[in-house]
Length: 233
Ligand code: AP5
Image 1 (cartoon, rainbow, N blue to C red):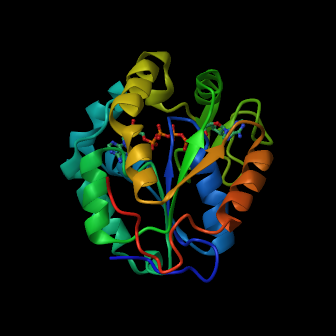
Image 2: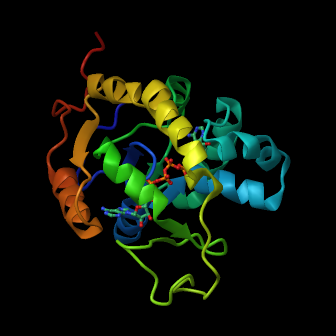
């Protein structure tokens, strides 16, 4: 399948990048702005864990340790979410795919218009991860210094006490970074060969990154004008 020439900004997007690169922060805002569904496999899995469903119980240990959740579980949860009506007019996949098997499965379900690779200095990732706090009720994400809530420790939207994600603690950090380098980073090359990859410098403030992201998405696609994919080597 091919996506053809796009009349406006890309509407079927993947955000690829290491943990705490700022994918979720940018995806939430861009999805609101463009009327796209924001599909975060991390959020879907955390909701399944909180519900105590079979899938959530199976995912919990992997997530706490910072390992990837097995492909079959993630594909199940993502496939169900992608089939919902709000995703039909466009989506941002945040944190999916993360393995070659997931990327291939996704290619069988839908075409993509662009894959944005968030490129960030590893030192910044550690700072962003250590300072992240989130609302267990509504999922809003804050940072102790770069995006603090109005009242310390409380969600701006609903006043709930903010928490630190179990996998943001130092013990899981190294495992998550290794999982990214070994299993997810090779997808950059995979999508580059398909003419879909766009690299985003994700350093700087959230506002600076947001402006860069919009410029990047306004650029014409790397695809040939007839929408054909470049041949795979
Ligand atoms: P997931 O929730 O997807 O975690 P992740 O990819 O590691 O991404 P993060 O949520 O950590 O970061 P982000 O890039 O969204 O950054 P954010 O915007 O929050 O996955 C969690 C786990 O679930 C995985 O480890 C795995 O076990 C499992 N999982 C999920 N998907 C899976 C899959 N497909 N396959 C298998 N397993 C899967 O920003 C981070 C912090 O920085 C925030 O505090 C934010 O306020 C701040 N910030 C954001 N931008 C900036 C900026 N420009 N400057 C300063 N601070 C910033």
